[in-house]
Image (cartoon, rainbow over all chains, first blue to last red; front, side, top):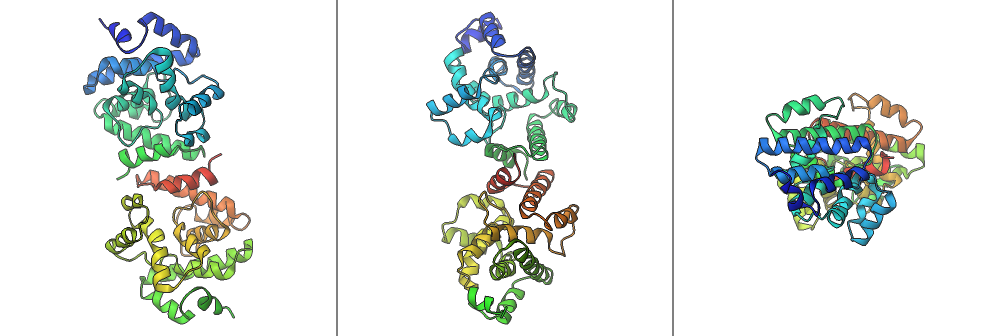
Length: 196
Length: 196
């Protein structure tokens, strides 16, 4: 039964978990996380990943994205997370601090799922298959609509690593064009998966 | 006398120093370093920098750029320089390892000149006036010819920091477009002088 993955990887039944996530997110974001879940399942099947873990990772990855800055910063301080992240804003905090709150509040303890959530925005220089699946699913889920997304959707039909490369390069170019802060870990991802 | 700066900041008279640099560089690069020297002098005068230090920094900044990789790597190992730089190639090595050889072989001991040479390719998140002068002079000297250089030459007529920003953003975009490795220090420079 597909619903077994909920009690296997979280402290809740499917319906309860969905409700907890629904009340923690805007309507738009809830639609996004459901779409990332669906996309992650498709990618896990396609590339031989763990379908259950991909499904849960997709569902919980943005669980804390709408929390107040103060709460995410409290998590950073109380858990002695890398203080370097403080300068980088919610976009970076919600993955790293998210893993703490997903464990505390949703009962997710699987290390692979937590790692995938932790690096879903930045990637890392040592991405596991599940990390790549979530990183890419978040980029191409059907609600995404930006110049380049169709190219990514074509790439991922045949090659996950090339899509990791594409997302990383695309994201970095957009950050620099917009003069937005770049988290150093993003550069590690770039040097590993994009640069020659 | 302008020639005093040579014996003040190096172990050589002007003519000897120029000859040492000339035989260490291709004809094209020797022309480049003379042009960086001239440009650095102009910028130092314009922005209230030390003209003598700017002149010497411009002249010596690429002194080791044509050394063999093995020699630059030997310098990295023997001087316990940050091993992280090893993956990043001559473009990064010649500044950092350069400071060691410029001190050993040319007798340059002034800390401000050595620092400016050390960061002339990457910048840093804490650039002194002399660092900025060399960083920008290297980018805009009259022999440079690439899309965007005229914009930089216009900017530097009025604002050095905006030109530091322009070079950093321009360089990073070019690196990403070319899928070239990015040294993490470059991102520190970007986060300090480009990102909001």
